[in-house]
Length: 181
Image (cartoon, rainbow, N blue to C red; front, side, top):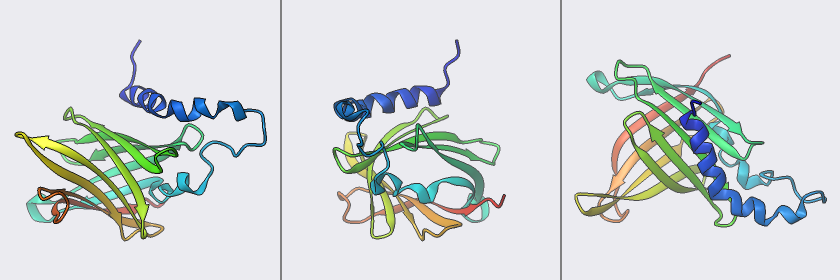
């Protein structure tokens, strides 16, 4: 039986948030608020849809697509990223709002073997995700920022910091344009 990476990620996310779900299961069958229906669970809805992506200039220019869907009754945001170039960079993420911590959590995997885990929040009209990483024994910060968010476009940037977030170095910026149906 062949299991897709997306199924494994969904199962992992379910395990991560299951204490929330199971801990509140005693309200099942009552007039309790439906799961994932509070406003916090919809902070990331701006990202839902099919997107055309562009980045860089000249030899560093690239393009791709990103399809973002709400899954599991709207409780999980699933990303399916693919570059258009011959290198075919492909990745998937799953994001969920963790009501206990009041933070978003995201897990990213891709065809380079990367696994990244982030926490995040929506603040002042922008969405932030960050993590701490280690390379060559040195700790540094990484973050993603969604900004210039409009109905049919937005910008995303990937940054790193070696001074604990005092300054950030831009590594990659992508412009999102919603695909017209």
